[in-house]
Image (tube, rainbow, N blue to C red):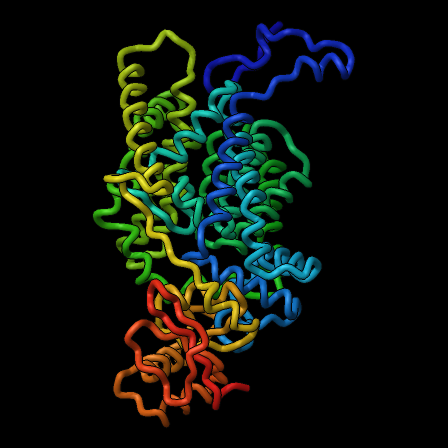
Length: 513
């Protein structure tokens, strides 16, 4: 039987047994693939760890947005402060869907978001398999690709929205960024199949719709996703002519229509916003090696692919992502550093493919395999240490629970707090803040600055009771959450205390609505 030539130089179908007749016989002969077994075990492990992990980081903002959609799907309030949510970029298609699920089921926003973890993970894991199949038919490629994408990061654990290593996934498995990256992998796979074979208009339109959804769900991921689509089309598109060009023009048009038609916010208004750039500077500098350095073991594999095909999508995409990250550094638009999560994919996938190519191996390939194995061992130790308390290994910080306080706070109550962790966690349970933990571009700068100033005044050691009452009344604050050592407001009554940290939840009796 003649096999089908694949990009890794092997054949698909050669030497395979003929399928057994009859459904029962086929079922009896079925065995799960190595990747299916590994991916299932990984999904269960990360789902359990993500569910058990206390609310941390940006989870509270996304859960709060779900809660606002649940309360009013058409005109949701701002996720963090008690103002209108018009044009807030938190209201992506994914968040709206989750908000509607919360409304139908009656579940709290944080419960829906926590329960979404296995969906995101399954979508991501199937995305790895789908994209791997466009690179090689070998069944071990997705296994190695999953191992590479999980382990080949750096010598210190890195957790950020859009970073998908085991330690990070225990925190952000539920995040929209994880869904966006999973959709990116599936979109790349669909693009590869489309470029290699003549596809219909609906397929091209579907790629555009996916691209539009990625842009709305996680704008920075969409830049890397678009670069990947362009690299695949440049490298693998056959028989360029006017009809083919028209189909890809349809793809672009479909993506634009989806983004322009979205009623909740204008994604293109974010292009010139520099509000959060200062927070992303830490993605660069000395962290280039400590956070991402192990991925460099995949660069020789990219070089091998480039030697065989000058326009191979993986090295082209890697160079494009480097250019995007470099632009972020030299322009001061450090938010573009979020591309590092996708920048690691090309060397990781290239290494997976090259390690299963047909033998005999030369000395260079054996050296590459040995170095890759050593890097994977280091990555395994680092990632294990990020989720398990093992002495002498680096750990990611964990946050304590705030259920001791949120059990007393109702959805929609306004809380005064200047604590970094509290302002991230409390919105997960439906509370509003006076000043958000993360700048929302939909709020004018003067509004954000005034609110931040008023919170600092309220918690100043020189604030008088009259000033505190004025601030609390201005924002209809019903509660104040005090760090250990902050003085009790004159009209406040302690309702609950965290015995470990000394934090106190205070009811502001004279200012409650």
